[in-house]
Amino acid sequence: LAILGPIFWVPRVRIDLPTVRRLFFVSWVFQTASASFGVLQIYYPGQFQPAISSVLNEDNILAGLQITLANGQRVLRPMGLTDQPGGAGIGAVYCVLFSAAFLLERPRFWFRMALIAGMLIGCFTLYLCQVRSLLVMLVISFVAMVVPFIYQRRLGRIAAVVLPVG
Image (cartoon, rainbow, N blue to C red; front, side, top):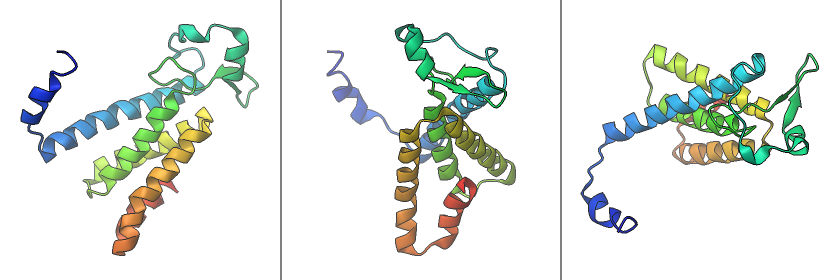
């Protein structure tokens, strides 16, 4: 019954455009927070570090998930709001994607600045996490976002998506 229950109530749920926007906004806030905590975990090692997943308790596994900072200190890859080293990268990818999507709506000045700051934080966190598959996923997502604008010859929209990330 628990598995088949949504068959009966989901068709009656009415979701309108403002509800979807709010849902994406809340998701953007949480993903940006995760990416921001990833940056804080690198700048202040050990201070914003959550408990590590119990699966990763062996020293040789944890050694492979560490990065060396400019001062020579070895720290775990940024975790963000997760318990997995490198987990902040997932929040960073979604932070950048949601920011680009919100930029296409031509938001007000202050929200636009917050979106661009979120994109910068997301790109920086993705760089710090060193998870290449997430970078590939982000590039593919941006290509998929830009291709329809290329066919429509909407250069302003392409610039709104590509320039902040560049």
